[in-house]
Length: 395
Image 1 (tube, one colour):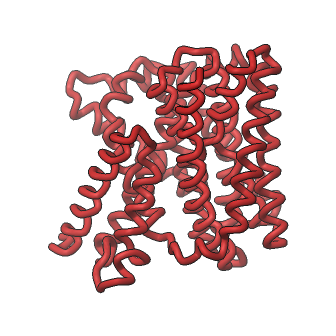
Image 2: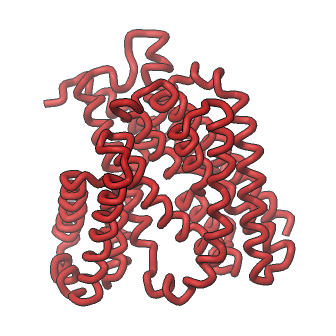
């Protein structure tokens, strides 16, 4: 049994998430920053500093929230994988490579700023990933809220996001290998990435060669049994990935690609969305709960430079990527501002950094990088959604 105190803490967290989502919805903003802020306020570095109580105070509640956060990563990446269309990717691969190649330049601002302030290659590499990856979840939601989902700009944005997501999956395989103590040499990294690629290759081959296996596994007239089978399979595959030394998030992404190629896609999205939203909310809350806002004071200069440099860099690479395909100035501007928002992937990098072991368990990685990622995401998610709304009103 969890105990009365733990149940109260978990109930308080979920009520806070519900209120935060309502407030964000009222102002037509992303709920990710709100969930992070609530985690900071209700965590040990918020009310915990003022009194003897905070959410996650009991060991049982803390373990539940941490496990829920891991499930949040799994469902976030699973849904991202389901949104991929391998057929469409093959048809548009030439365009994606051009847009994505230009977008890869967005690693540069984070790497340069990180190395300038810390003179550490690993810190610079982590900051590069944090500022590189746009938020697929927030941008996709903004496209729907603004009525852009059927526009050429939306297609350009989504193709850029697809390329980024593929890059970041490989990136996550690399940093999880290094930060979690599996080795820093090129052989270890190559093996880890190779296992990841073999994993997805096998799943995709099974989907194309034996799609009836997945269909048969999920085929049932009972919604309850359907959910149990789907969630169970996702959990088992994520666990197998961990046993192989892979990130559970990477595995969930690959499983999402596999399920996305079946005729159960719409049913999976309908029945599992609540899992994604609940555990995704817990993940963002957990990030906030483990972030000491006092660390923000020491990264103000880094944050300002990173926001300006990476925001402008992202805008111009996306803008000229759109111009390359003959978009007019207004449409290119919408694509440019649309890519500014950062979110869930940057926070996954922060979570991995906080768990670093061995030679990388240093304050610059376990404390400064997560604090930077949280503050950066808060600023860029608010700035990005505001600019998209402003450009939409100006159109």
